[in-house]
Length: 616
Image (cartoon, rainbow, N blue to C red):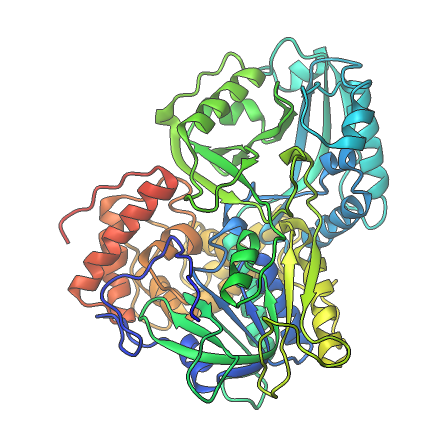
């Protein structure tokens, strides 16, 4: 029986059928690679950072692996993060010492293997009391139940940061924490609330473009599988392909049914091991595969992005990380010339869109006033908002902030005797498929999680690990300059190719050292910058269309660039980008106009941005 599926924000446009294509949508090579060889050792469902990280790891081990994502890569929770790569100092209060240790190790590691996107982040905690929270902390630590929040004072924060430094001692490249009294703290950050008693400063890291880092990881996996003699290579991935159900055509009983969300075409696909990495949707995905599970209990986190020079200056280039009066941990920090404010932690209704609400915006304004009382923030300062559902485990009456951020892997499949429980899938060889469901997971630990999950898959396949990813550079992080002077030298060197400094810097920021390949592509033909922005050119859009699986216009605005995040999308930009993409993606005029309308709807509905289109 076919199960229901759940639409992503990039829903199907135009008329579709099971066997036909939507008007103006040619068949994609990424989907063709799956259709023409509809089986693999492993099928990963879910193209967030954890699914993509596992795809890369398995491809490097020589596994025949396929990945499908019903929307765009990094579209769900992975793209709605706080843009932090951090050890999780607050997880110490949960007693999650293993997770904190793994997180700080992985934070330090990502600073080395992905330096093009992961950068050190100086973080300051304003503190308003000395001993507050000491009496309530043991109860909160032991029970994790709901109750009246107590502010954490300097004593508890000092203890936590000392433990944090201890976990960071091996392989660390960041300084230890510092404590300042009120006078020195206000000298460094004069716009902080004058009622503070102390300020504690430590270092974590940020990821300024998580969507492109996810794409880099994916392309590493595809490259690793490209040398295989198998048709299409041994590592194939496609976005906008949904797992529909276990219902499949006659003669292929038990295979999952996949659907191209851009054309409506459906086809069967078989694998020995299925990895369910769909985040907060894990239970729903298992249901669609005919197996019941009750693993998930995600919470919603929302953020706003502000164009507010006064607040940007007040942050002094640092993240301000603190506890609000209700006990929630929140943050304010610069992202380029914008300020990111977040995050909420509320129960998620999976039947509703994850969007930032008016109540959450009011909450953000209140927290900014709590830390910077002399700075006024209004709705006109918001250029973008976003929300996602964290893939947390079911947690009953545990406070959302205390729900474990660690991960686990749930296995279903053949029993040791070989008898398959009801609801199992049948793999290509006639035996029941193993399903590994990922519960939990966070950005910082994606590489270690992928290694763990891949080891479980390798064990199921009877294979050994060939390559460690612990020290393996990711994508454009390979040979990335290790200092600001090195970056400037890299820019000067590549200006010799005829690009000005701003253009080279923009490409290096977007692609890391892979910018060399992009610049070679741009130089190989006639090119011009777009009229609507200096940050993109006609041939760069052509490069994206040819190499980065663009499914919708909005993919370029939100996930291949940061134009939407920074509030730089205009009607002129929508029309111009759609016009260029149409030439390379086979969009006719009706499809092009539908894409413009779709982008407007996504930006309005999910990100609070209204863009009025020009006449196409």
